[in-house]
Image (cartoon, rainbow, N blue to C red; front, side, top):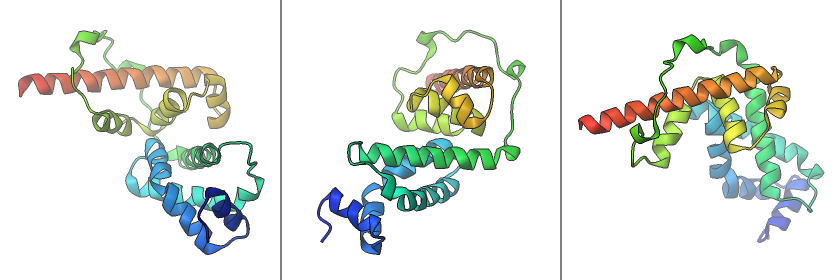
Length: 183
């Protein structure tokens, strides 16, 4: 019945539950991965993903077949995650730049072998506001001006948070390297 993506999309436009279920099953892992990058834990990411899928089903009539459907869904999922971040901003904790070591960490101190999973865990441990800026800039490819508009902060705040992200990630990499050398 729904053998192609176009048929699934058409079924979703007609609000057919079977088509919606097929769309969800086909894309939920990828969309959950996006949400995990912006959320503090798996439960929050799952909630954001479900809200994102509800947004997709609500807005699917506006999808234009000229664009990538998966790209369109990713944008909705990222925007849903950002909305969740903004809604919960009052619970976020910020750190002062003085909290971080000013040592320059040289590349030769970084671990030689580090997995993608270890890097994702390091990113996941970043404070929420920093993690959002890092993901939008480094992974999604947004410019600081766009990030500032999305998060309703100044461009300098976006740049500062990215700087702090990098310092925290460098510190995590350095600590991982120290742990690996002591083993």
